[in-house]
Image (cartoon, rainbow, N blue to C red; front, side):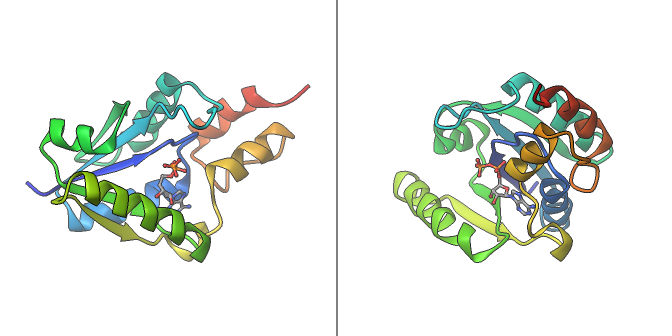
Length: 159
Ligand code: ADP
């Protein structure tokens, strides 16, 4: 079984994330979506809600499991006995941060490998933060997220 861990904040899960997961399922037998608590960001949705939304959105996909992830990625990888990590690359500006993260993880756990996939062009500019911004001002997010997530986003509207 070739398994890959897809870590992230998923605040909330977007069509870009789902696109990456679907592509990964062509390369791997199993994808573990690791939803980070993320102390460095202040997420809009709680970790529990982010997990629930991801579970509902990804339910039609076989061989995908959504897990909570707190702490270091290398510890999560060791616990699950997985050495492959998946990240998405959208635009050049993602690259520097992703490279830094990858190299840090490799320093900490030398046999870990990170695989980068690019989404369909139409999702290259989709991000959770953009979606949250649109939702905050009452905009329609259905182009970017699953209807389940769009519904949940209505609760974050300002005023
Ligand atoms: P993080 O806070 O760890 O960056 P995100 O949930 O924002 O968590 O993203 C998780 C991963 O998914 C990152 O590698 C990010 O680059 C990637 N990603 C996010 N949105 C997209 C998208 N639209 N297309 C492809 N990859 C994406």
